[in-house]
Image 1: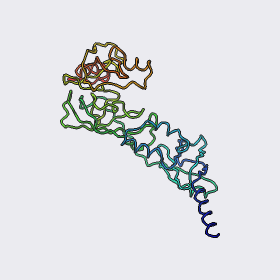
Image 2: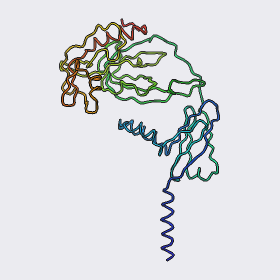
Image 3: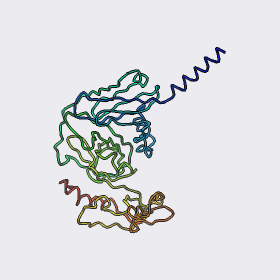
Image 4: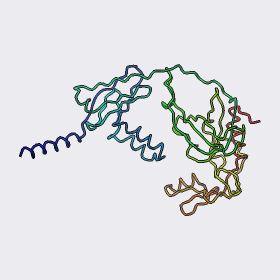
Length: 319
């Protein structure tokens, strides 16, 4: 009978330890000026991001960021409430502050939970005031790697949308168009405060990169997605001004082009209105849930669009 009694108690303790416990407390800052803290169970979001960087599967990430099982945020007073198992850990993080980790088993022993976040060490911000690049390159590039790298914590600087970092990009140069970059691969930084740069979605792109203050930077938002044509050239399908809609004088016209048979776009998840907007019949043939490009623009003409548009506006002259 004693053995049976012991086994029953042992089983009951396992069930209890597996149950969620509500953790509530206050998070404050050693330095004034911030009131937004993310509280995560087992650093779930970071683990997802690290895995997604390898698998390239980000579809469920937005939903995960809103899942109260794994993440919550403090209110304006610093109060938080989240449920977790005693075997879990809670991670408290805020922009420009040192992330702190606490075992739930330790937190539940406290009568009151008060978390104090310490600021990260900061360095003076030195602005690059160079307006025109000392060197400028235009090339057809094939993506090798692109990854986000958080920037230093600068003293007394507030960044747009809280973004302080760069996307370190490595591309194979398929063909030099301007500037004659001497190596087979090029490394440059891309800055986009709205998230990962759009050009990273494509395998082959026409890119515009300049040297500012001794470092190579992608000219923000400037690119064309490129695809092979049956004659061996490169071209971008669709409206040649799809990324330059504000250009007043549209002198370049898309021409009939026979793209490689492998070039088509899946439209199964798009509504009729989305199909018409993204793949207008002037430039694409719609068949069997595919948008097949029938008109496009060659690289030389794409360069002219940028030359007469954004490059001219930024006083970047092509010799």
